[in-house]
Image (tube, rainbow, N blue to C red; front, top):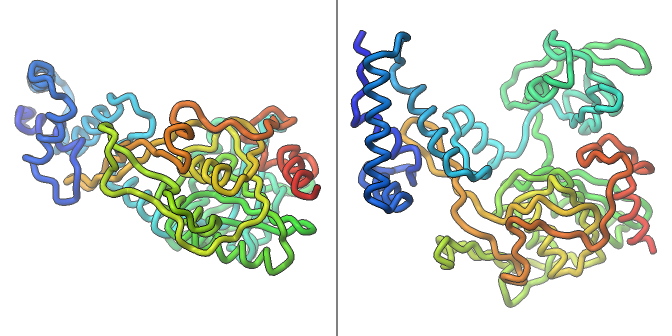
Length: 401
Protein backbone atom coordinates (compact mmCIF):
# COMPACT_ATOMS: atom_id res chain seq x y z
CA UNK A 1 0.00 0.00 0.00
CA UNK A 2 1.31 3.43 -0.92
CA UNK A 3 1.76 5.49 2.23
CA UNK A 4 2.86 8.73 0.60
CA UNK A 5 0.86 11.90 1.23
CA UNK A 6 1.33 14.56 -1.41
CA UNK A 7 2.15 18.09 -0.43
CA UNK A 8 -0.74 19.30 -2.58
CA UNK A 9 -3.20 17.18 -0.61
CA UNK A 10 -1.91 18.42 2.73
CA UNK A 11 -2.04 22.05 1.64
CA UNK A 12 -5.52 21.59 0.23
CA UNK A 13 -6.74 20.13 3.52
CA UNK A 14 -5.28 23.00 5.53
CA UNK A 15 -6.73 25.63 3.20
CA UNK A 16 -10.15 24.01 2.94
CA UNK A 17 -10.32 23.78 6.74
CA UNK A 18 -11.07 27.48 7.02
CA UNK A 19 -13.09 27.86 3.86
CA UNK A 20 -16.05 30.07 3.44
CA UNK A 21 -19.11 28.95 1.55
CA UNK A 22 -21.08 25.94 0.37
CA UNK A 23 -19.70 26.56 -3.15
CA UNK A 24 -16.16 27.25 -1.96
CA UNK A 25 -13.39 26.92 -4.49
CA UNK A 26 -9.70 26.50 -3.93
CA UNK A 27 -9.08 30.05 -5.15
CA UNK A 28 -11.49 31.55 -2.61
CA UNK A 29 -10.15 29.28 0.14
CA UNK A 30 -6.59 30.38 -0.50
CA UNK A 31 -7.61 34.03 -0.49
CA UNK A 32 -9.24 33.60 2.90
CA UNK A 33 -6.26 31.66 4.21
CA UNK A 34 -3.84 34.26 2.93
CA UNK A 35 -6.03 36.96 4.49
CA UNK A 36 -5.65 35.36 7.90
CA UNK A 37 -1.96 34.66 7.56
CA UNK A 38 -0.99 37.79 5.63
CA UNK A 39 2.74 37.56 6.23
CA UNK A 40 4.28 35.78 3.23
CA UNK A 41 7.16 34.30 5.19
CA UNK A 42 4.75 32.99 7.83
CA UNK A 43 2.62 31.32 5.15
CA UNK A 44 5.72 29.82 3.59
CA UNK A 45 6.80 28.47 6.96
CA UNK A 46 3.37 26.89 7.44
CA UNK A 47 3.56 25.22 4.03
CA UNK A 48 7.05 23.95 4.80
CA UNK A 49 5.95 22.58 8.17
CA UNK A 50 3.13 20.62 6.60
CA UNK A 51 5.46 19.34 3.91
CA UNK A 52 7.99 18.31 6.53
CA UNK A 53 5.38 16.40 8.54
CA UNK A 54 4.13 14.76 5.34
CA UNK A 55 7.62 13.49 4.48
CA UNK A 56 8.28 12.20 8.01
CA UNK A 57 4.98 10.31 8.06
CA UNK A 58 5.49 8.97 4.57
CA UNK A 59 8.98 7.68 5.34
CA UNK A 60 8.68 6.45 8.91
CA UNK A 61 5.06 5.90 10.01
CA UNK A 62 4.56 2.23 10.81
CA UNK A 63 0.75 2.13 10.72
CA UNK A 64 -1.63 2.29 7.81
CA UNK A 65 -2.66 5.70 6.52
CA UNK A 66 -6.38 5.95 5.82
CA UNK A 67 -8.01 7.40 2.70
CA UNK A 68 -7.55 10.95 3.95
CA UNK A 69 -10.89 11.60 5.63
CA UNK A 70 -9.52 11.16 9.14
CA UNK A 71 -6.47 13.27 8.34
CA UNK A 72 -8.74 15.91 6.84
CA UNK A 73 -10.82 16.12 9.98
CA UNK A 74 -7.78 16.17 12.25
CA UNK A 75 -6.03 18.87 10.22
CA UNK A 76 -9.15 20.99 10.06
CA UNK A 77 -9.92 20.63 13.75
CA UNK A 78 -6.33 21.40 14.69
CA UNK A 79 -6.26 24.47 12.47
CA UNK A 80 -9.46 25.89 13.95
CA UNK A 81 -8.34 25.06 17.49
CA UNK A 82 -5.12 26.91 16.72
CA UNK A 83 -7.12 30.15 16.51
CA UNK A 84 -7.46 30.03 20.29
CA UNK A 85 -11.15 30.92 20.11
CA UNK A 86 -13.39 28.59 22.15
CA UNK A 87 -16.40 29.73 20.12
CA UNK A 88 -14.91 28.65 16.78
CA UNK A 89 -14.94 24.93 16.13
CA UNK A 90 -14.78 22.25 13.47
CA UNK A 91 -17.83 20.02 13.04
CA UNK A 92 -17.64 16.59 11.46
CA UNK A 93 -20.31 15.71 8.91
CA UNK A 94 -22.44 14.04 11.62
CA UNK A 95 -21.96 16.94 14.04
CA UNK A 96 -22.77 19.39 11.26
CA UNK A 97 -26.05 17.59 10.52
CA UNK A 98 -26.99 17.48 14.20
CA UNK A 99 -26.12 21.16 14.69
CA UNK A 100 -28.16 22.41 11.74
CA UNK A 101 -31.08 20.12 12.60
CA UNK A 102 -31.17 21.56 16.12
CA UNK A 103 -31.05 25.16 14.88
CA UNK A 104 -33.81 24.56 12.35
CA UNK A 105 -36.13 22.44 14.47
CA UNK A 106 -34.97 22.65 18.07
CA UNK A 107 -34.17 19.68 20.29
CA UNK A 108 -35.76 16.28 19.80
CA UNK A 109 -35.57 13.36 22.17
CA UNK A 110 -37.57 11.57 24.86
CA UNK A 111 -38.80 14.77 26.54
CA UNK A 112 -36.89 15.13 29.80
CA UNK A 113 -34.43 17.53 31.39
CA UNK A 114 -31.76 16.15 33.71
CA UNK A 115 -28.99 17.31 36.02
CA UNK A 116 -26.32 15.64 38.09
CA UNK A 117 -26.58 16.19 41.84
CA UNK A 118 -22.97 16.05 43.02
CA UNK A 119 -24.01 16.38 46.65
CA UNK A 120 -26.02 13.17 46.52
CA UNK A 121 -24.08 11.57 43.64
CA UNK A 122 -27.25 11.04 41.64
CA UNK A 123 -28.48 11.70 38.10
CA UNK A 124 -31.86 13.36 38.51
CA UNK A 125 -34.81 13.98 36.20
CA UNK A 126 -35.57 17.67 36.75
CA UNK A 127 -38.45 18.11 34.29
CA UNK A 128 -40.71 15.92 32.16
CA UNK A 129 -42.49 17.54 29.22
CA UNK A 130 -46.26 16.97 29.01
CA UNK A 131 -47.33 14.36 26.42
CA UNK A 132 -43.73 13.30 25.87
CA UNK A 133 -42.69 9.63 25.50
CA UNK A 134 -40.98 9.89 28.89
CA UNK A 135 -44.20 11.00 30.58
CA UNK A 136 -46.20 8.29 28.84
CA UNK A 137 -43.85 5.59 30.16
CA UNK A 138 -44.26 6.86 33.72
CA UNK A 139 -41.03 8.79 34.31
CA UNK A 140 -41.52 11.72 36.67
CA UNK A 141 -39.59 14.76 37.83
CA UNK A 142 -37.43 13.79 40.81
CA UNK A 143 -36.71 10.26 39.61
CA UNK A 144 -33.07 9.16 39.90
CA UNK A 145 -31.63 7.55 36.77
CA UNK A 146 -29.30 4.68 37.67
CA UNK A 147 -28.50 3.17 34.25
CA UNK A 148 -28.92 3.98 30.56
CA UNK A 149 -28.81 1.18 27.99
CA UNK A 150 -27.42 -1.08 30.74
CA UNK A 151 -24.53 1.31 31.51
CA UNK A 152 -24.47 2.33 35.17
CA UNK A 153 -24.49 6.09 35.75
CA UNK A 154 -21.45 7.73 37.36
CA UNK A 155 -20.37 11.31 37.82
CA UNK A 156 -17.87 10.76 35.02
CA UNK A 157 -20.16 9.35 32.33
CA UNK A 158 -23.55 10.98 32.96
CA UNK A 159 -23.01 13.62 30.26
CA UNK A 160 -22.22 10.94 27.70
CA UNK A 161 -25.23 8.86 28.74
CA UNK A 162 -27.51 11.93 28.61
CA UNK A 163 -26.87 12.13 24.87
CA UNK A 164 -29.01 9.00 24.47
CA UNK A 165 -32.01 11.11 25.57
CA UNK A 166 -31.84 13.30 22.46
CA UNK A 167 -32.23 12.50 18.79
CA UNK A 168 -34.88 12.45 16.08
CA UNK A 169 -34.55 8.85 15.02
CA UNK A 170 -37.47 6.63 15.93
CA UNK A 171 -35.37 4.41 18.16
CA UNK A 172 -35.62 3.78 21.87
CA UNK A 173 -33.44 4.08 24.95
CA UNK A 174 -33.56 1.77 27.97
CA UNK A 175 -33.63 3.63 31.29
CA UNK A 176 -33.38 2.23 34.80
CA UNK A 177 -34.42 4.59 37.56
CA UNK A 178 -35.46 4.76 41.20
CA UNK A 179 -38.35 6.45 42.94
CA UNK A 180 -38.76 6.35 46.72
CA UNK A 181 -36.33 3.45 46.94
CA UNK A 182 -38.17 1.38 44.33
CA UNK A 183 -36.35 0.35 41.15
CA UNK A 184 -38.16 0.83 37.84
CA UNK A 185 -37.31 0.56 34.17
CA UNK A 186 -38.71 1.94 30.92
CA UNK A 187 -37.99 1.72 27.23
CA UNK A 188 -38.60 5.20 25.86
CA UNK A 189 -38.92 6.24 22.22
CA UNK A 190 -37.00 9.19 20.80
CA UNK A 191 -38.32 11.70 18.29
CA UNK A 192 -40.32 14.04 20.54
CA UNK A 193 -39.97 17.73 19.63
CA UNK A 194 -38.90 19.45 22.82
CA UNK A 195 -40.21 23.04 23.04
CA UNK A 196 -37.54 25.72 23.21
CA UNK A 197 -39.51 27.38 26.01
CA UNK A 198 -41.72 26.30 28.88
CA UNK A 199 -43.45 28.15 31.67
CA UNK A 200 -46.23 28.61 34.19
CA UNK A 201 -48.15 31.26 36.11
CA UNK A 202 -47.69 31.99 39.79
CA UNK A 203 -50.43 34.30 40.98
CA UNK A 204 -49.99 37.25 38.59
CA UNK A 205 -46.34 36.58 37.66
CA UNK A 206 -45.46 34.50 34.62
CA UNK A 207 -42.34 32.36 34.41
CA UNK A 208 -40.69 31.37 31.10
CA UNK A 209 -37.63 29.17 30.82
CA UNK A 210 -35.71 29.60 27.51
CA UNK A 211 -33.54 26.57 26.71
CA UNK A 212 -32.08 27.90 23.45
CA UNK A 213 -32.62 30.40 20.66
CA UNK A 214 -33.57 28.25 17.67
CA UNK A 215 -35.59 28.95 14.53
CA UNK A 216 -38.92 28.08 16.19
CA UNK A 217 -38.18 29.70 19.58
CA UNK A 218 -39.74 33.08 18.74
CA UNK A 219 -43.02 31.47 17.66
CA UNK A 220 -43.16 29.26 20.75
CA UNK A 221 -42.18 32.17 22.97
CA UNK A 222 -44.90 34.44 21.59
CA UNK A 223 -47.56 31.74 22.02
CA UNK A 224 -46.53 31.09 25.63
CA UNK A 225 -46.35 34.81 26.44
CA UNK A 226 -49.85 35.30 25.02
CA UNK A 227 -51.19 32.33 26.98
CA UNK A 228 -49.74 33.53 30.29
CA UNK A 229 -51.04 37.07 29.75
CA UNK A 230 -54.50 35.70 29.03
CA UNK A 231 -54.28 33.74 32.28
CA UNK A 232 -53.58 36.95 34.18
CA UNK A 233 -49.81 37.53 34.07
CA UNK A 234 -48.97 41.16 34.79
CA UNK A 235 -45.19 40.68 34.86
CA UNK A 236 -42.69 38.08 33.66
CA UNK A 237 -39.58 36.23 34.77
CA UNK A 238 -37.37 35.05 31.90
CA UNK A 239 -34.89 32.36 32.93
CA UNK A 240 -31.77 32.08 30.74
CA UNK A 241 -29.49 30.58 33.37
CA UNK A 242 -27.26 28.04 31.67
CA UNK A 243 -28.59 29.01 28.23
CA UNK A 244 -25.90 29.27 25.55
CA UNK A 245 -27.28 27.58 22.43
CA UNK A 246 -28.80 29.25 19.40
CA UNK A 247 -27.94 32.21 17.21
CA UNK A 248 -27.94 35.99 17.50
CA UNK A 249 -30.45 36.16 14.64
CA UNK A 250 -32.96 33.94 16.42
CA UNK A 251 -32.41 35.76 19.73
CA UNK A 252 -33.22 39.04 17.95
CA UNK A 253 -36.52 37.55 16.77
CA UNK A 254 -37.44 36.67 20.37
CA UNK A 255 -36.49 40.17 21.53
CA UNK A 256 -38.69 41.58 18.76
CA UNK A 257 -41.69 39.75 20.25
CA UNK A 258 -41.31 41.70 23.48
CA UNK A 259 -39.94 45.16 22.86
CA UNK A 260 -41.78 48.01 21.14
CA UNK A 261 -40.79 49.26 17.71
CA UNK A 262 -37.81 51.55 18.17
CA UNK A 263 -36.02 53.94 15.84
CA UNK A 264 -32.62 52.38 16.44
CA UNK A 265 -31.33 48.83 16.21
CA UNK A 266 -31.53 46.13 18.83
CA UNK A 267 -28.16 44.76 17.69
CA UNK A 268 -25.52 45.24 15.00
CA UNK A 269 -22.83 42.75 13.95
CA UNK A 270 -19.48 44.42 13.16
CA UNK A 271 -16.50 42.77 11.51
CA UNK A 272 -12.87 43.19 12.56
CA UNK A 273 -12.60 46.45 10.58
CA UNK A 274 -15.55 47.96 12.44
CA UNK A 275 -17.92 47.76 9.48
CA UNK A 276 -21.33 46.06 9.51
CA UNK A 277 -20.92 42.38 8.73
CA UNK A 278 -23.00 41.23 5.74
CA UNK A 279 -25.83 43.68 6.50
CA UNK A 280 -26.43 42.03 9.87
CA UNK A 281 -28.51 44.77 11.48
CA UNK A 282 -31.31 43.59 13.77
CA UNK A 283 -34.37 45.75 14.40
CA UNK A 284 -37.59 45.65 16.42
CA UNK A 285 -40.73 46.09 14.35
CA UNK A 286 -43.47 43.94 15.91
CA UNK A 287 -46.06 45.01 18.46
CA UNK A 288 -44.76 44.96 22.01
CA UNK A 289 -45.68 42.96 25.09
CA UNK A 290 -44.37 45.51 27.55
CA UNK A 291 -44.73 44.85 31.29
CA UNK A 292 -42.31 44.56 34.21
CA UNK A 293 -39.60 41.97 33.45
CA UNK A 294 -36.87 40.17 35.33
CA UNK A 295 -34.16 38.15 33.59
CA UNK A 296 -32.34 35.42 35.53
CA UNK A 297 -28.67 34.90 34.55
CA UNK A 298 -25.57 33.06 35.70
CA UNK A 299 -22.01 32.51 34.53
CA UNK A 300 -23.23 29.93 31.98
CA UNK A 301 -25.55 32.43 30.30
CA UNK A 302 -23.71 33.04 27.04
CA UNK A 303 -23.94 34.38 23.49
CA UNK A 304 -27.48 34.85 22.20
CA UNK A 305 -28.88 34.68 25.75
CA UNK A 306 -26.62 37.56 26.77
CA UNK A 307 -27.97 39.75 23.96
CA UNK A 308 -31.48 38.89 25.16
CA UNK A 309 -30.67 39.97 28.73
CA UNK A 310 -28.75 43.08 27.63
CA UNK A 311 -31.44 44.42 25.30
CA UNK A 312 -34.29 43.78 27.73
CA UNK A 313 -32.34 45.72 30.34
CA UNK A 314 -31.63 48.64 27.99
CA UNK A 315 -34.95 48.78 26.11
CA UNK A 316 -37.50 47.55 28.66
CA UNK A 317 -35.71 48.46 31.89
CA UNK A 318 -35.79 44.80 32.87
CA UNK A 319 -33.99 43.89 36.06
CA UNK A 320 -31.29 41.25 35.82
CA UNK A 321 -30.98 38.94 38.83
CA UNK A 322 -28.35 36.28 39.45
CA UNK A 323 -24.65 36.35 38.68
CA UNK A 324 -22.46 37.84 35.92
CA UNK A 325 -22.82 36.23 32.49
CA UNK A 326 -20.11 34.45 30.48
CA UNK A 327 -19.14 37.39 28.26
CA UNK A 328 -19.53 35.86 24.80
CA UNK A 329 -20.48 38.91 22.75
CA UNK A 330 -19.55 37.68 19.29
CA UNK A 331 -21.45 36.17 16.36
CA UNK A 332 -20.55 32.88 14.75
CA UNK A 333 -21.26 31.80 11.18
CA UNK A 334 -21.36 28.28 9.77
CA UNK A 335 -19.23 27.52 6.70
CA UNK A 336 -19.71 24.19 4.96
CA UNK A 337 -16.67 22.24 3.79
CA UNK A 338 -16.23 19.95 0.83
CA UNK A 339 -15.63 16.94 3.11
CA UNK A 340 -19.19 17.19 4.44
CA UNK A 341 -18.20 18.87 7.70
CA UNK A 342 -18.27 22.55 8.59
CA UNK A 343 -16.46 25.28 10.46
CA UNK A 344 -18.36 27.35 13.00
CA UNK A 345 -16.32 30.54 12.96
CA UNK A 346 -16.46 33.76 14.96
CA UNK A 347 -16.99 36.47 12.35
CA UNK A 348 -18.23 39.60 14.15
CA UNK A 349 -18.60 41.52 17.39
CA UNK A 350 -22.14 42.16 18.61
CA UNK A 351 -22.99 45.74 19.47
CA UNK A 352 -26.25 45.81 21.48
CA UNK A 353 -28.92 48.53 21.62
CA UNK A 354 -26.85 50.98 23.64
CA UNK A 355 -23.82 50.71 21.36
CA UNK A 356 -20.21 50.40 22.43
CA UNK A 357 -21.01 51.22 26.05
CA UNK A 358 -23.08 48.02 26.30
CA UNK A 359 -20.66 45.59 24.60
CA UNK A 360 -20.33 42.54 26.84
CA UNK A 361 -17.70 40.53 24.93
CA UNK A 362 -15.03 39.40 27.39
CA UNK A 363 -16.59 41.16 30.38
CA UNK A 364 -20.09 39.71 30.79
CA UNK A 365 -23.25 41.42 31.98
CA UNK A 366 -23.39 42.44 35.61
CA UNK A 367 -26.81 41.81 37.23
CA UNK A 368 -28.93 44.64 38.52
CA UNK A 369 -29.26 42.62 41.72
CA UNK A 370 -26.50 40.08 42.28
CA UNK A 371 -27.78 36.92 43.96
CA UNK A 372 -25.70 33.75 44.25
CA UNK A 373 -27.42 30.42 44.72
CA UNK A 374 -27.42 29.19 48.29
CA UNK A 375 -26.15 25.83 47.03
CA UNK A 376 -23.04 27.50 45.60
CA UNK A 377 -23.21 25.46 42.38
CA UNK A 378 -24.18 27.70 39.46
CA UNK A 379 -25.69 24.84 37.45
CA UNK A 380 -27.67 23.35 40.32
CA UNK A 381 -30.59 25.76 39.81
CA UNK A 382 -32.58 23.13 37.93
CA UNK A 383 -32.26 20.76 40.90
CA UNK A 384 -33.95 23.25 43.19
CA UNK A 385 -37.61 23.70 43.94
CA UNK A 386 -39.30 27.06 43.60
CA UNK A 387 -38.93 27.49 47.36
CA UNK A 388 -35.21 26.65 47.55
CA UNK A 389 -34.14 28.52 44.39
CA UNK A 390 -33.28 31.86 46.01
CA UNK A 391 -32.58 33.54 42.66
CA UNK A 392 -36.04 32.69 41.37
CA UNK A 393 -37.58 33.58 44.73
CA UNK A 394 -35.91 37.00 44.59
CA UNK A 395 -37.37 37.59 41.11
CA UNK A 396 -40.89 36.65 42.20
CA UNK A 397 -40.64 38.85 45.29
CA UNK A 398 -39.47 41.89 43.31
CA UNK A 399 -42.28 41.56 40.78
CA UNK A 400 -44.92 40.80 43.39
CA UNK A 401 -44.04 43.98 45.26
